[in-house]
Image 1 (cartoon, helix red, strand yellow):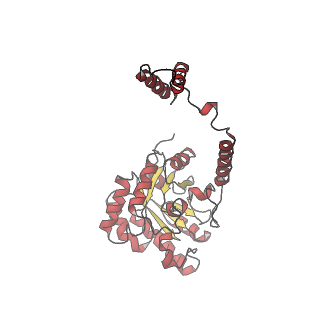
Image 2 (cartoon, protein in one colour):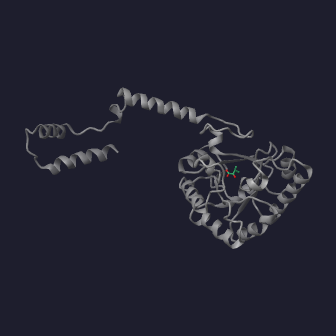
Image 3 (cartoon, helix red, strand yellow):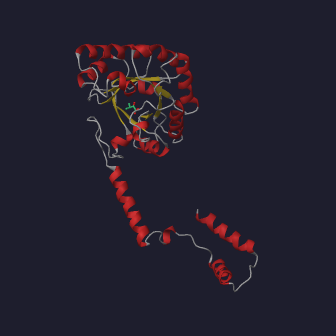
Length: 303
Ligand code: KIV
């Protein structure tokens, strides 16, 4: 295990080794991400789609995000832990945003937070930073703006919109975010942002020029059979492997091959004999406590 990765350490990776980021939503997936060498684990509000079966991220609440963040934190990852701020948890007042970011840190044990948006969110970003909470920005295709964008559309395709995006990235970097996620933007736009801003850019559907890349855990590992976006590369089809494994379990259940000797507990022979006699009615209960105690001791040994 390498040492703990911090927000300043990620900030210092600008232009250096590519940053490896992946989402996770619970303790086992966080362990897997950390063992694989993630630099950053994001507890994304994409948990809505990836785990909770929702069609967008808008229903996620701060309570739900705290719950998932705390589960991930229990893996004690070396990776930097980023908690995603859900829609409406930072869109009202800076005070409320600081309160909600603080919940992700205090109750969820995140080390930093991520929030979507550019110029409109600068006051909130400054307030959260003032509370000593490192902030990761998120520009381009920001899923919490799905209705305002008119759908999940690649952003910055026209020169004016691309120029605005580059300006907003600079505003975020100047405000003090430690990194910026660029989602769903043309490669050339991400390249210009990456050249321009002083902090690392982390791309998802933003081409290869970014300082790092992020994917959603369940997309990258093929843990579902939903259609994925063009930018997703599936590195495994774990859903297929899981189905095959469970099919084999069910075959074994039906054939009686499961459980076998290795998966079965036994009583000490002496206790088994007494039990059999009791069961047949050919013996009285001699020191029932003894029978129970020795069975419990046997159980404890085998745990
Ligand atoms: O919620 C999420 O998983 C994200 C990533 C796609 C960057 O915001």
